[in-house]
Picture 1 (cartoon, protein in one colour):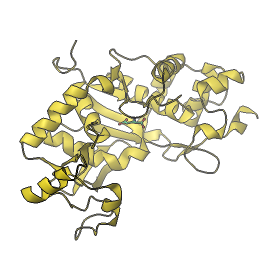
Picture 2 (cartoon, protein in one colour):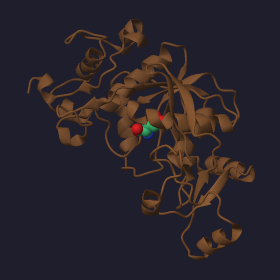
Picture 3 (cartoon, helix red, strand yellow):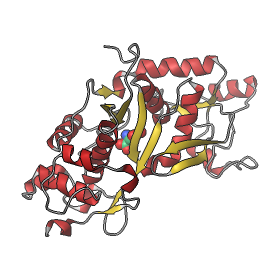
Amino acid sequence: MDPEQAAPPPAGRYAPSPSGELHVGNLRTAVLAWLFARTTGRAFYIRMEDLDRTAVGADRQQLADLAALGLDWDPPVVYQSQRLSSYRVVVDTLRDAGRTFECYCTRREILEAPSAPHAPQGAYPGTCRDLTPAERAERRAAGRPPAIRIRTDVDRFTVTDILHGEYTGMVDDFVVQRNDGTPAYNLAVVVDDAAQGVDQVVRGDDLLSSAPRQAYLATLLGHRPPEYAHVPMVLNPKHVRLSKRDGAVTLADLLERGVTASGVLNHIAHSLGLAGRHESVELADLADRFRPNELPREPWIYSMSEWGE
Ligand code: GLU
């Protein structure tokens, strides 16, 4: 079934990037996304965000790890790499509506350009927004392919987040298609969520500041922005974002050390205040206990010593 054509039921989703194995932080976010969706009667989808660097087989490994924790999801598993024509149609529609412009700036030019008066820090400085046809022709002739940016008419937008409340953040003329022709994440995420009826987005709070751009774009495309829940990240004992360098952080690493999948689920549940430290729990138990308002708002500091090492 083409997800674009059906009137989809309300849904939540988990959208990993299949660039390697999921670590406990990713697994915890996935558990939360499942809990938020399933306790509110929503469908739950998995979407592979494979427009960037991917590792062979990582998608299948990630799905196996999620299943090992007891997660289930509704088909189909969507792969962004198979949806390029959908993104292209949306970029073309925006362009035809005068909503985009070609941007020839290098990253360095953007960093070095003086920012526009009153523009929020880090915003695109507007260099290519109003090029004359002659200036554009000159840049085209120089041979550097353009990225496509959205032409915004706001510079802030407010989203609703279950954990953060009303959150207002910057919206600049962000990239919707990179200069190699690849759709930008901020475009793909909006197109995909709308196509699948996703009206609840649960993900790491490192993406909170991207939500206003995405919700603005959704509105521009005639979609109602989703409700968000940006959940706390998992950090290592030095309070740095958890990574593979932090020891045994993937399910495979932990299984190798004799921890079971249900032990990992218990640990995650305990970190969320949903289970005692050595209580045997299943996802269905957690669903009964799940109260979004009572979730911890602080990052989870994950240390191998918690496994008794
Ligand atoms: N693919 C992103 C990640 O793995 C998540 C994007 C999203 O949930 O919108 O961090």
